[in-house]
Image 1 (cartoon, rainbow, N blue to C red):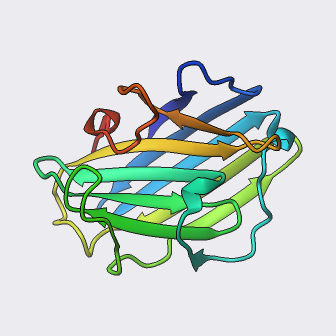
Image 2 (image 1 turned 30 degrees about the vertical axis):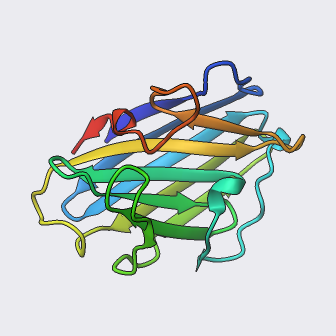
Length: 175
């Protein structure tokens, strides 16, 4: 497993939150975890209502994973909400050709929530998209919705003037 820490976009207050996690690729499965600690009661984290495919999850608290084959412009985006909502989108290039990826089935997700922490562990089968040994570039990010209605944007890197998780410079892991 490769450990990571996400950082809020420069100039955004962390709100007393830290985000850490880990990711690994085991054959055709991506396994990953997110751990939010600190003032999680200041976040809007809807209770889990079951796994269902939903759009626009990034407009609220949303844990995200982006990946692309090493030599291709096309890439995928996984969105996971604390409520259990999820979706995967395919892109033909940087922010172009977005469509729902139908070849992916629901990820297996486990959630634990306490007064001071929120954790999400998941596995996602990607075998329908990639050859077994195709090297991947992977980015990890999070949108947090705070009780005061503001959104904060967290990522491994913030290479642009505005938050942009789709930027190839955010796909920092090689697996």
